[in-house]
Image (cartoon, rainbow, N blue to C red; front, side, top):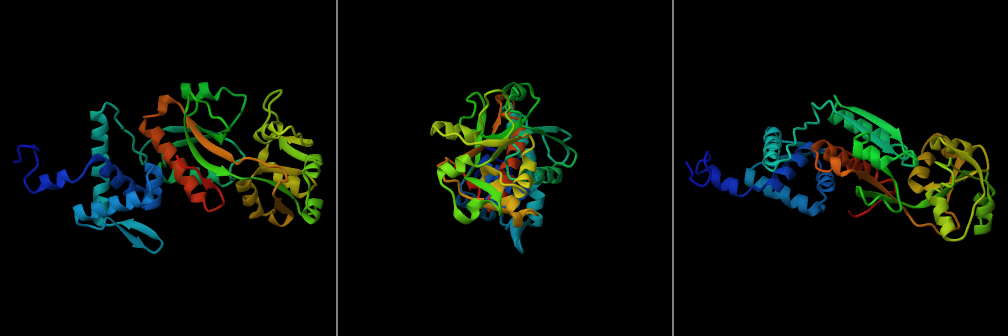
Length: 329
């Protein structure tokens, strides 16, 4: 028996010295995600650091742990055998620090409540739900529209919401936040729109018939109009619609102009309406929109809250090839 490590024999103690809790967390995330890049995203690390940790684990444990299978990585038998013990060790460490994790995605029956802007990539929320259903099949997911007039700060504080996702220029300082990605502002028009052939000047663009979200409350100004206000400009809004997902169909069949994020526009160009739509850069200068996820201190250290936020980040990473530029944390 080793006097420094009760319960460890002389053969095990040197191995124990070589592994710390961060390495165990990296091991557990690698085995769960089966991807170095997603593990780096979830842990907030650079990919070379995770690759180095994987090399260290392979050397210490004497096993590849993860191996390539076509375009994917799969755990070895040793790797699979380590998943549950690594999770138990992390639970024990958090219990020791007074913050027990007691959360297992595979068995949780928790209800996750997320409010999100409908100006996001149309595939984001569906893919987030699919991912959560795969990893936490017994959980429930409630997706709510983001009502800009609703007291979302209070909803997060009271547990009526777990997470809010939208593009804020100045997120509430009372909340924790993580910038997910930046999105360039573009205009979506019908292929029949005159600007497709002849282009447009700032004056032309401002005078067009624009379609915009319905005002959340009297005097409400969306992100696009806030930026125009700052430049002393005003566009002609001919139509307001509370259902953002229906607007591309209106644009395709009229001369309306929708101005929003490139990500949203490009997804519709790839869909059934693609042949009827064209994306054009607006002739007015706009800053990029930044999408954040925001949460309250109430759920900041909870394992289920951390897991939910990790799934959001991983889903965004899966969509990053469609022109959403990541923002450094």
